[in-house]
Amino acid sequence: LSRMRTDPAQAFMRWLLVNVINTWELRPKAQTAIPNLTLAADYVQTYTDLATMEGANEAARRAVNSILEASGSNATRLKLWPFESPWFIRIFQAIDWVRWKLGRKWTPFWPF
Image (cartoon, rainbow, N blue to C red; front, top):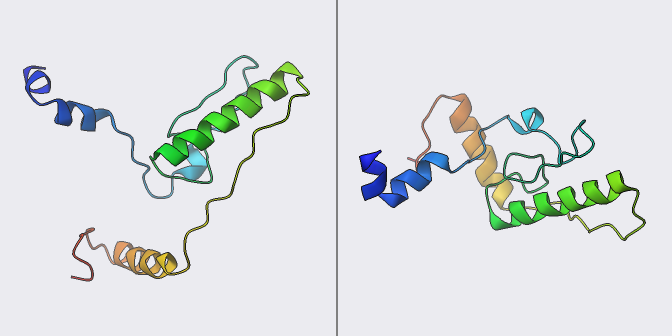
């Protein structure tokens, strides 16, 4: 606890959720089976699938749409946009996937 008081950055990093590979299916949707419980955070299923402001915005939009649906509102639903990576990002994703399959640790100094 004393370390957390002296190093706020480390305390924050302990609670930052960064999605782990192959966990999207394990995360809940914004709308739950409990009628008055709606979720919105990095851990819900979103198109963005990243711990970013864009992901938070999308999760919030999904939560609002869920509340509108559950309340029977006829208000216009908020728009959701599928996340589209630029084509060249897929090259790096493929390289990263191969490295992961080979058991190599991630390094910012690709391809070494």
